[in-house]
Amino acid sequence: MEKTILEIQDLSAGYHQKHILKNLSFSLKENEILGIVGESGSGKSTLANAITYFADIYEGHILFRGKDICHPASEEKRNIRKHIQMIIQNSKTSFNPSMKIKEYIAEPLKNFYQLKKEEIRKKSIELLNMVGLEENILERYPKQLSGGQRQRIAITRALAIQADIIICDEITSALDVSIQKQIISLLKELGQKQKLSYIFISHDIALVSELCDRILIMYQGEIVETLKSSELKQAKHFHTKELLASVFKI
Image (cartoon, rainbow, N blue to C red; front, side, top):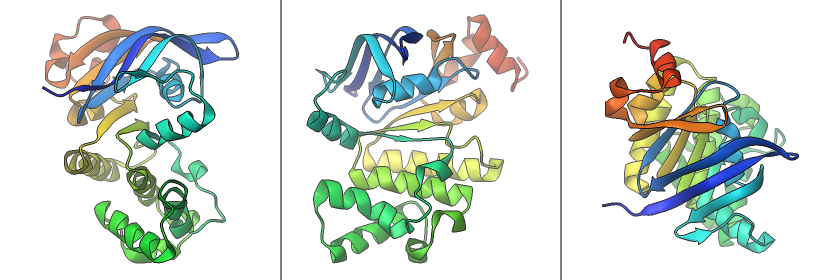
């Protein structure tokens, strides 16, 4: 049985004293792909931001490997971010347009591992191969890449840091269906090979059901239902049924 790597206990969070999340509790197992689904405004991205310190935590606990990481000192926060990485919806905004891809990939290798120039290039090529990209990508700028290529590079950066948990916040929503399927297939493959745990956030319950082991349904800042992907037809909450009806005939 896989161990719990991340546990959320009675978490309330938001921004500027406005509570968006209300008493959320759930856990993530090692090597698990956990889906979080809900409509726009349900609190999905706020949850991702709370785990990665981009939202305010008002109550509750976030445990990483059994240790509470809610309010760490700055150096400890840096170490935690090495273990928990987030990839966002708009990959374009996460890139510095003046940086070549080789600099983007090299940054975490320098910051966390102090690798030499030759070692960085070798590792960068290895990482590109892992996500199905060619070496010549290194000399390009973000604007010269497609949306799918940028998301692969964002995944590469998380792999470079050797994260244990990757939070994917709507990372396929701006991509066409064929590229979505490629990214989903890549995440599955990397998860198995690298022993990764994922939190995959999306409004698309059909897509999430293809990828994830379990699915949490969020509605108005709360988790209203938790189901295995194979048990979606057993959904009881009205919002889960609404999400299913929008994509499946039920």
